[in-house]
Image (cartoon, rainbow over all chains, first blue to last red; front, side, top):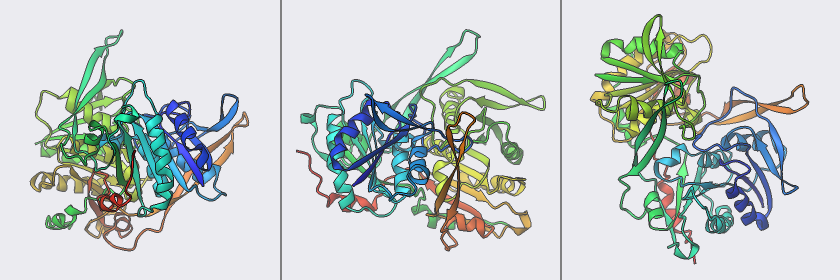
Length: 255
Length: 255
């Protein structure tokens, strides 16, 4: 089994190292990850600049390929340039991300976008994130990734469907199980801290908190609050099919 | 009627100027757009750096606010900082983008992500793009945006649903009508041109072409090929609902 690993926290990130260690015994592991931290890059790809790829060593040993681009770039360049003459990987895993990618955060997530690129290429793919930014203990998320990896290959999801996994940041013994989830509709209440620089220009720092998280246990944000592992099937067809019929009633005209 | 305009080609872009001109008579227009070109930034937001906002003049007159961030940043900072004490806009329009945002390009699009932010804020929103990179004539797209603006407010879409509009790059007289569409599933066949820099490092330029565009007339990529204006209802709930039941059969265990 060939597994391609990537992330958006960068090739140096401990979450990626934990993932490599977790799946090491499952097959042939290849790491292609951003050289720099790429959080909240969304589904960015690099079009206007060329990409460079470096071999990256860790503790004196080859660890993987560092790309000066985004997570989506890493998956694209792996498939279409670095390993284009080889069979496609059997599985792609993106993570382990520092910080939850649940609810609306899913759409901003570089971690998820890498799994999206995997799905576009027809590779069984999942993203895995740990719901904390501080003092991360990746062990439960790593264990779950290892558990899910062979299942993803056995249980075939429909074309274009992949998984977004989020793990609560609690000790393993406090995890209350696995919840199949849908994306929360909770929004952010945003706040910009306004400051003034030494040249008297204003600048704005974004902060925000999620409000109105739904109570239903099958909502991804709620699952994390309930100390459950959230597993959400995700796809990249953004069409709102339910509106197609009602929009035909608009009777749009172009004369 | 208050209209907020933004784009991803930057505040200097002629497509934005064409949009401003098109909707000028409809109400109070405010422009908040990226200072620099931001194509293919996806749904990026700026978290690790502060944002600066400058007043931008054009032909000696105030034109709008230039933000050193992404399209999504522009919408967020407009709503939560620049105009936070004012009523929300009645409409948000993002564009007119240079290049189609149809099919899979939708997920990479900064233009669309700005409309997504509008929808998140509960503002009727649409993105509008012209399907060419060369010698753009924005007049038909601008005319359609002006036609659609009051309709968007009258015809209420469900919460979280907005529109992705793409206009073929042909003379107005050759446009064959308006098509309500869904997102094409056509993928790219990517190619990286590999070159060597003066220091003998390899670098990779991404190119690619879309292949296997569906034949059905209600597919967005096909509508453009058929010289029709594509209007797609879009949402940001990425859950693949059809897989929720089948995933419960996986019987995931965590002991």
